[in-house]
Length: 379
Ligand SMILES: Cc1ncc(COP(=O)(O)O)c(C=O)c1O
Picture 1 (cartoon, protein in one colour):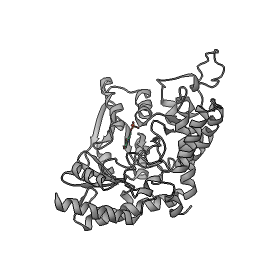
Picture 2 (tube, rainbow, N blue to C red):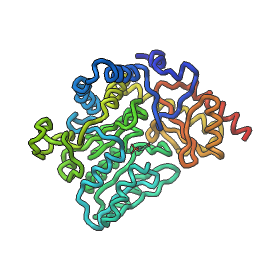
Picture 3 (cartoon, rainbow, N blue to C red):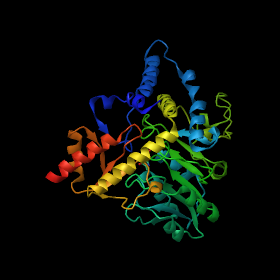
């Protein structure tokens, strides 16, 4: 699929909407919407029970996600959201009073609250102080003590767009015997993830942002070592080895990460994610990454050239992914003005945040810059 063909799959482009908000919510491409409609038609039509048929996609999705993250399909589990996934490790690991966890001070709260919730057990949380949107690995290292049990970090920061070097941080965790957890909802499908090479123990992703699927259906990766340390707090009939021996009540957990899937799941969410992974595959993940990065780089350069204060002042190819953030007065007002002109972005913590995807173009970026200049000149 080439870019012209890819763009034909987005309805909002037909009304010249410039949608630069994939870090919040992705639009559903037509082939994804079509599969979701098919699902609904089956459920609301004569067929009614499409459970078994849809369930067949589980293995497919997990293989595709395994390819995306470089892990076995058996190491992937589905879940509702990042918060529930991270809570599995936060609540499942054995913590002792005085154990410490290191987080960044600009993390999305889903990667913070499950750990703060452990403070009542005497677990301490240390925060790395960010500097102009950047979390330095040297600063993580400085906070490590012999009591540090875990580092949990976003691959790409939701607010600033900063992409941390996971290979370096993962190597440090390995060397110091620290569990390495990564929130990858802003990175998987955007920039390369390799859980082996990056020595990641736990990785959470989503489907409704960059992967253009539905809300409330996410996935995570957990390696075998970490799984052995987790005393699972929530179990259900799907968690066990023989789920269809319904009244045997043999609580023997599955060996694979499927054990964390407690009961009936969002089959419509699965349908959407399966279709969107196919859509991505037909364009090529490497090409997608290349285009997203090129868009971000161009956007940041143009903003800088036009005198805007970008958050990642000294950006380079290595530290950017899909998010472009700007410090600007009256950010909320500007967001609304842009919306009136059919340009969609968002404001987080007073920062104007843009997130173009692979199908977006430099021409669209030029239009956004020119509109932005109009509004900022007048305000
Ligand atoms: C980095 C990051 N993590 C997590 C989330 C979402 O968390 P949850 O899936 O718990 O709603 C977001 C955005 O909504 C995010 O940007």
